[in-house]
Image (cartoon, rainbow, N blue to C red; front, side, top):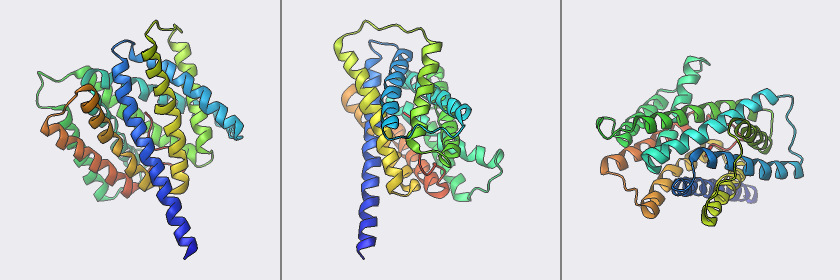
Length: 300
């Protein structure tokens, strides 16, 4: 009995960690959207990656989690996916709003199903396909796909790009997570992501007010490094599938926060759509448990 009680307490703590991470990731998107009024998304993505790389790298070094197992090319690819999902997500929330942007990005797990079935030839449960269909229908409602006049094609394409790169992040993370600790993967991933940003975009210290710098630091620390560490702790204590389900609360948190803070209210149809996406992705997580056992199930 004491052992079962201890295991239950440990799992409950893991789920609370996952919820805290989802909250921080969700709020981070809102803070970023507000910062975009003064600074370009690409510059926020660059600075965020550099700061997160320094923090996670220092923690990994202190905990002796700098092992790479000779898998540097894969870790570089993982870093490239992190860079891709960040900028596409930022462009999406900047153009179509936080709620629709984060909802589109969370279509990634449904894309994972297609890859698993078509490329990896894995057997996928019928219930998972139904859940994916529900999520796709939800995305159509969120983006108001029928209203072509109000549709922002660049924003929607950016959101789909965020979902695709998020799917790649999950698949490659699953593969890396079989042999490397989650902290090592996150540290190397952000290190390579930062390297890519520094090479691709000339470094330029933005001339913005102090409050914007505060937002950038919040995004990098409380909105990136801390939730990554929380989710790593979560998947060590609780079932990855359940952690993934809790992580699907991020779109709800982001949408609600954007409504309260930025006044970005959704139409009733979009609210229903966001709910369908959350329900669909949560079901996919439960059925497939496709998230790696030692890797955070979120990217932004």
